[in-house]
Length: 222
Image 1 (cartoon, one colour):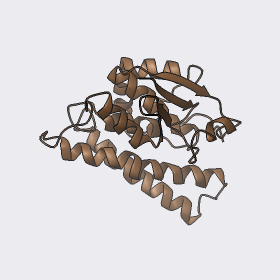
Image 2 (cartoon, helix red, strand yellow):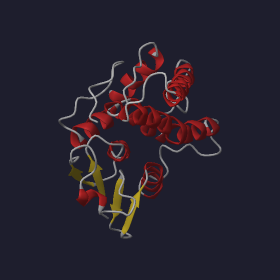
Image 3 (cartoon, rainbow, N blue to C red):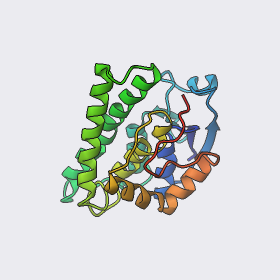
Image 4 (cartoon, rainbow, N blue to C red):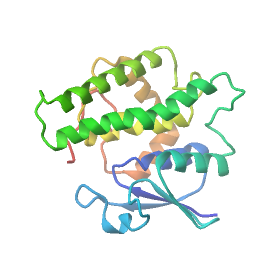
């Protein structure tokens, strides 16, 4: 088996590297630089969707995009279901919510902030107001939950934690928002960032990138 992770620099495919390091799944890492902000032509040619992440499994000659699909595929085929609580686990409903919320609700919310900033909408534009309102509500809900739980699924680290970390950190190179006042989220980011698997993953995937682990957003790459 050769599992290849096609990683676009400073992108959500960092999640897949983190996952494989966490599970101890062997993989080959191919790195692609942005040109200058978007994916280069050779990356877009890997799959009709042309988005990050993309993995290739030589065992089945499968090329697969989409963060959730990649994480579920690897965790269940090669990780024996680790990081995915089972229906018999009391934490299962909580895990399901945050697993889907992280990429189904929160990341699109951050994406709206990114787009409103990229096109230069004024602060009083209704789209900016809507994006900021939804972001603040999302961060508030997450901060409250993390004030009572070590990880998103409770006491156990799970795939939901791998999913959300990018949106709270690296994505702020594209969507500028502050985490000041969200002390539980900031403490959570520090917990995740201290995991050996995360440190190894980020060193391999983006060795030259300054990690975004504090309250302030970095200079935009857009």
